Image (tube, rainbow, N blue to C red; front, side, top):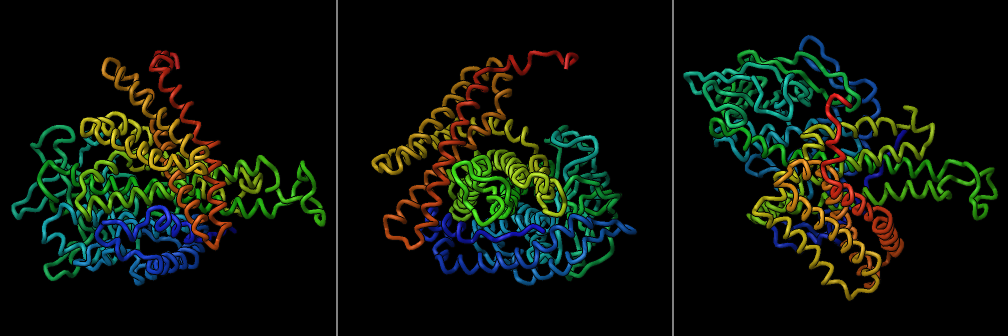
Length: 592
């Protein structure tokens, strides 16, 4: 059976050695000293390892069952959800006014990684609720917030987002779900939504659906979309639950992975709904959910890579196969463990260097969200907006690749269910698809985000990289291994952006054909920047006489591997971008 070991030590390194959270001028960060964060991460790690992880394989095997309109979650899920809820883990970064603990989002992100690694399908129930909470908190009326948020913060009530319909996914302007106005100010919602995660289940007393729909007579396309609160059970004025609303789960999707999460077809048959915000402004409110959700999905991608790597590493240390080409390493055994072989080392180093870089990148992104929300920093808001498609797209592509590499480490054993690696592969695969496919992320990055603020934000990113290199170029130990590769990669990214500027206006396909490569090029530069910062932190710790020299020397070796073996991929991506649209668009559709 697979194992999971919460990587709290590495999280502490990122939070304190790299991000130096307690010294940041972000409200709430002054409380994040090492002792405080260690206590939170330690307890969350126990929940992840002792409560969630043991249910991961059984949840995958049993799945969810629809019986008489009610979805039964796998055995043990409800009891585990009660433990998570009672421990306050669902309320970690929520507003204290509604029962939350008010901690920074970066702490919720760290805890979320552990919970996702331990049991991704299980953690999605509270994750969707958190997204719905955010949308109501940001755009709901005071009455709506008072009615729904306290129970959603505690996860006594769940939450969902309802976007996709059978005939449309990304192009939401085509949705047909209607919202008929009523005399009392409510609406009657009618239509069908599909692929609704946690749409129906038995772990909460109520489920608060956020549903995109069109009010008759409104503008065409996305400009005519509004967002509605549609509760499973109507809520009385005193906060008690009233009658069942006119909505139902019409079926469960049979999926490749995340079997423990109920992915539902939801039917709305004149259900009572309440408008959030203004009419025809639903997309703005929905994107409050989507942006956080996309960072959360990027986290899911690398979190599955984390647990897959841990199991691959354990196998590689134990599995005996062949002898080391440079000399026997375990003469008392019939063969050496496979970790002695260079290609297995390459495989493991690819995994390790990615997941540790991805963790730092995601935590940094979470700190930008905190700076934006808690300090009102518009530049931080613009930066995380630019980076969100990179976090979602790059980290899920590479996270999935990491699970496959981990599976490969086990050889034939990785292909069997007993060892658990094939579940990590299957579960991780959805991260590249939902909350906007990675192709859509790349189009968003190139088509919208690069040009935001007149290109000032991407230029600010380049300046940040340049400033870090200049500030540290006198550090000989850092320069050759970290700074010089980062400088070269950053130049590749700038050259790609210049190509789009020179060619994209006269031929949009020249930019769009290279958008996916640009997303990966940008992702590598971001991880290169993170590894340069981690390299500096590790060197500083060693120079300061840190007692755990092995940890910091290992961090440096891992970083050097990424800079030498992975970061040069920016050159390949640039070459593909500069080949233009012609190779991609050469065939007529009929000739495929």
